[in-house]
Length: 317
Image 1 (cartoon, rainbow, N blue to C red):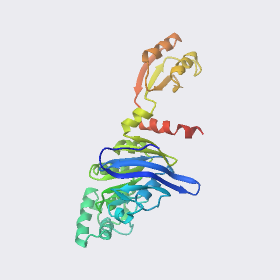
Image 2 (image 1 turned 180 degrees about the vertical axis):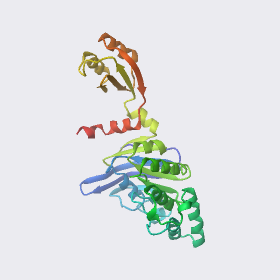
Image 3 (image 1 turned 90 degrees about the vertical axis):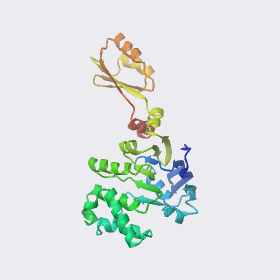
Image 4 (image 1 turned 120 degrees about the vertical axis):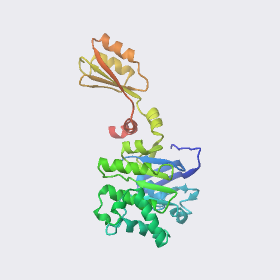
């Protein structure tokens, strides 16, 4: 199992964190370190173990085995202390629909010990930060999905947590609302330690300092977006537009496949993916087989390439 080591002080450190449901392993011996002030994204398909991991770290779900330390405190031994220094915005928008935005915020602040006056002050700060002051006296049920998500995160942040968990905060939002929420989350980077779960590849790529990819409960990769693209994708993809190709089983394609197993032919385009590519060798091969290359373009690897590589064996079954 891969461990993410960091030189900076750890905000979260898990050791062998495991959760079993009868015969199904939801999280399998997770070893992970997240440094203070980092925005760390857990990426994976539905059922990969993201939400189960968050629930264990928030002391809402007991692990089957293993442990985790939150700012040095054990989730097994110090759950009450941990709950005072964290907060979470869950998948299901956690708002009281018949209360106004301001009332929702004040309620959470008072639950966490603020006086009535202090709760009002904090609520106004959050309304301003998340740009919903003009809707402060509107009932939350009248808000769009994007505004409800903003309010939910504001409610999690009003307690001034050291660590903020965002569990798929943009799930179900339209692209514009998603990008607006991204901008709000970016404003929190560096101020708080944030753990963001998502199955949107572009979201992790856009927001995270580092990314951990879960697959069937296992942490199968961890690093910055650039590191993952460099180490785990198929490298660059070269697209060669040709004047004509004699079918996918042509001698030229068979010859190229000896050096480039990840070669595809789509219409009159040859796509070659590899960490290292000999451009002159490819063109020479095509010329020898009377195939003219009209245009060559290069596409850098993406996080999607990484994801597809890691899930290739699953998809093949």
